Length: 117
Image 1 (tube, rainbow, N blue to C red):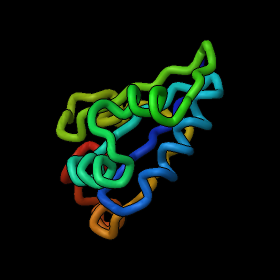
Image 2 (tube, helix red, strand yellow):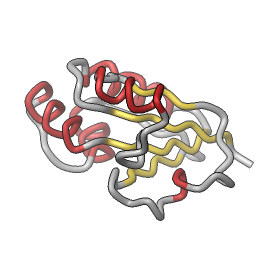
Image 3 (cartoon, rainbow, N blue to C red):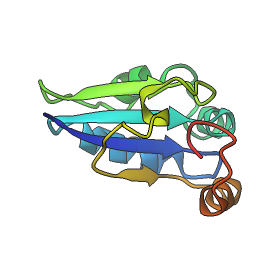
Image 4 (cartoon, rainbow, N blue to C red):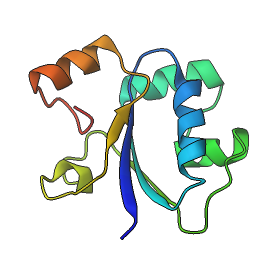
């Protein structure tokens, strides 16, 4: 079984860091699950000047080259039926980059307002 990593992008500044992380992760034989919040999408569009699916932007504008066994799955942050929402979804780690104070506070307090938190 391939290793699973969850990457969250929230509404803080620093989208380019997340894109560089994703570019590095897809070079490995990993299953990466991406959760991009609505505010994260707005900030990303402003900072990198691109809108749309992050998987497309990653390949076309950040030159990501995928490992043949890499898988990148983008989840809607409002979909509570997505795989990462389940307690039985086993993964090897999670990073939220960039992480807004709102998201950090929600995670710390256990307040589930979207799939990321």
